[in-house]
Amino acid sequence: MHVAKLLCTLTAVILLDACQLNTRTAIAPARPGHPAESPLPASSQAWRWQGGSRQLTLPGSSAQQKRTLVDVLARTDTAETTALLLAANSALKLKRIDDAGFLYNAAQVRHTQDLARFPPLDAERPWLQRIDALRVDTGKQVSSALLDTPKAYGRVAKRLASWRCETRQDYLPAWRSRHQRAAGDCQALSRERARALQDIATLMDIPSYAEAARLARYYLNGSASVRALPGLKEQYRDALAEMQRIERNKGLYGLSTRMR
Image (cartoon, rainbow, N blue to C red):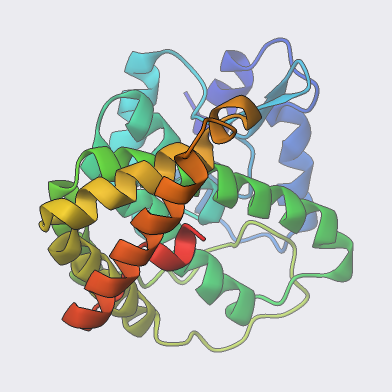
């Protein structure tokens, strides 16, 4: 079955469903063959909205998500930002932490590259805000999972550094664009993120750093009542200071800037 039709079938009771979002493909410049050959339909046709809440994973059962996830991983040259983010969230659901870390970071590289390469129309601002919300939500979930699996940082870094991030000639971004500019050096962006991840991997091998990072996360992710626990705020500040001290001593990029 055509992927777009499959996604429509899988998404039944929704506020803004895959079938409705097919209109975005019609507005964008048509490129023969692209939607049928992509692991997901162009734009965010798989981004489901149900009961007023974002459904941040690929549609379908776990088995269906696994099949689509494998397809996205095999064909990242056709996957735009939202496809990569949705796949990252499905990877988390399926306990595939390395895949989730890779896909999230690949999505960040793809998003930066696409904004420069395909300047979005002004009318796309609300859509870009949705994408940014998805990026933030996915980033929080992936970062938390990596923090609990610190050895994954190094594996994701190695994978990202060797990733062929170029897209196909008929690639379409996640938004409408009036024109296309020359592609920049996505490999440089990918390698830069990979170096940062490798720095974090090195730091997380230091027990005192890993412990401080988890305490900082506990405070930041806690509810108001958790943050109000006696002494916790002071412990968070001490943990952050310890992380910054170790980062300075090692001369490495770390997590402290994200945990302030």
